[in-house]
Length: 281
Image (cartoon, rainbow, N blue to C red; front, top):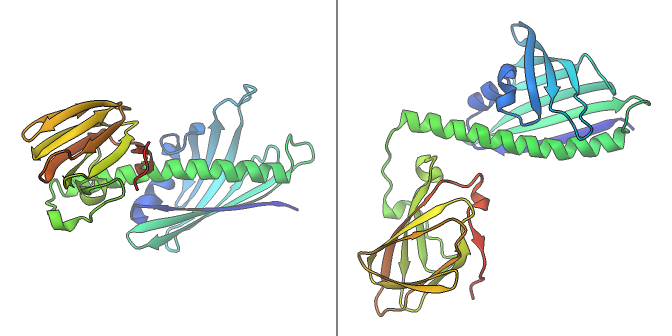
């Protein structure tokens, strides 16, 4: 059976920006991590011929080929084919773009067949393309989303967010509100939030692999466990928590503790920002 793959990703950026960046072949080396070179050979309206060159593989082989790409900006789809097929009998690719609210859903569909002399068969190449597509699509999404945040920040240099504008997060204990963040103000270097702990409550132990934390206690008192060492914190005091230091915040006083925290720089992805080392009750 010929090879067939279909992979989709949701990119938190408007369709025109996703279209512009993913169809700018000359800049694909800044969008993909697998291409050492992307050379446009000929362009006529919405048709472009180009040569792609990969980085050397594990056996120090360098793969390069010429492809043709035809863009349909009205229907938001692209068809592409390899002109220099190399180990493929043929390789046809389709890119589809759909609006998903303020985001964009991008789909890659690849149909191909391997030559009998190729180092891998159709099934093996299908597995390889599926694995690689997921990696590259994830990278593309984060790079396009970063550009979208930068453009949005340039258009709106400031934004006010009130306490009631953001939901309460109680997953790690206490009441945490992330007030200024990539999600609320399109920040690109860090985020700031508020923490309330009633007497006897705690924020469960965790650490940040990519971010430093700056904690300022407005009022109340806390005991902060840093890698197991107890550090008392009183109202009006600030505490610096380095990257990778495990920390737990406990309200050991008799009144509510209220604190402001800031973390930066941002992790590559939101799900990588916190590592929980303690599960709450």
